[in-house]
Length: 277
Image 1: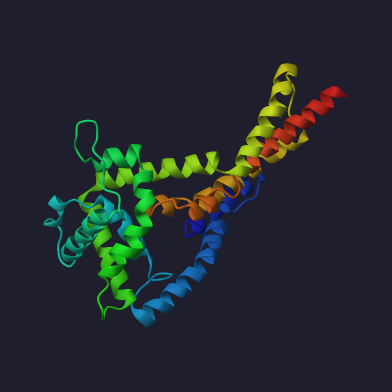
Image 2: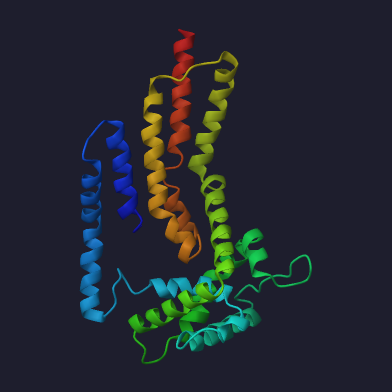
């Protein structure tokens, strides 16, 4: 949720501009600094204690699943050490997982080639299904017996960044596929969203026939939409950029998206009631 450090000040600026408040840029910067303070304090403390500036030593490990699926043998020699040695180990772990049936092998495309880009764009759930087994069984086993978790995480971070730099097109395909899974499941498998859309559909039919105007609740639509969008902007970016949209991440990002259609349904119902009177 680190993007909230930027998303919430932007949300504040939107409401401040709507209400005619002055000195918006200065206050937005101050708000961003306040929001960033816990992160900066915790990360500075970890930098001093374990020589690692971050919230926790987990980001590199978490990225390595994505990078491991992207990895191709022909790019390993382009990497510098120690990323090259780690890449060879990750590739061997992936192949071992594929042989054991724990890790999904990239399927053949329409011309008989194993295309990661094609699979990531069109059949992303192939990777999502075996991501955690790949990460927590195959890659986890690469940690050295005397290697601290901080060092292991840093090593995997270097490998992941080197892999993305060597194959940016594959990373773009991963982000696109992850986004399609995230957005699709935020709507289609979100019971609250489906109920809200069903209610909106039922109310909109008579409203459309009668050409009903929205009720007084319409004034709340913009703020509610802005808050829901800010929440998605705070929770969704890192999901698709460095890992995969697991259900626990999707449920978090989708927490508020049912509010706008439900509020629109209420505004239409108010308009119908007023027209009936």
